[in-house]
Image: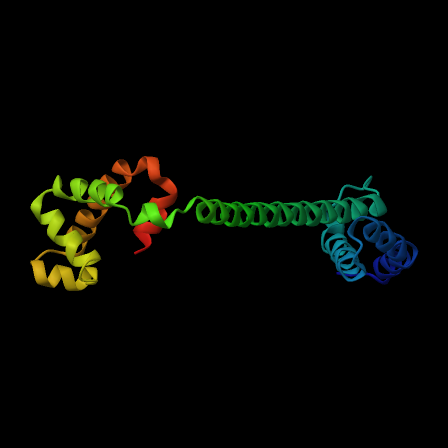
Length: 187
């Protein structure tokens, strides 16, 4: 049962420390609303647990410890968010740089050269007949995996396997032409 003395003691504690604790939290969080929420939550936790605390527990220290931990967790969460944001920014920068490098290295005369076409043709000729047929239906005829599966009486997974196999062999054959292979595999 809650006594009037408990309420008086809590109110005195609240009135004496509430603003101090908010200033403490704002000093770290720089956000008054979050600071007020953390302080209110800390007082609530104290009130709910006061009967279970050891008699020598210092209430202001107990409440401040809760506030400190809430602030610490909040700041760590912000740090993680910033790290993720920085990593995404770095990744996007890498993607843009790769696109720039690829475009700068792109030589249209070579892409359409006989030498490159011979490498592609020789690679495809070395593939099993079924893989050649499926790759041709995909790249030359523009059929979807579903359409190719229906036309060849294979599952879509089997079609994916054959296309992957052909692309892998082309990547190996064109490993010296990485910038060009990006262009080739897009079409």
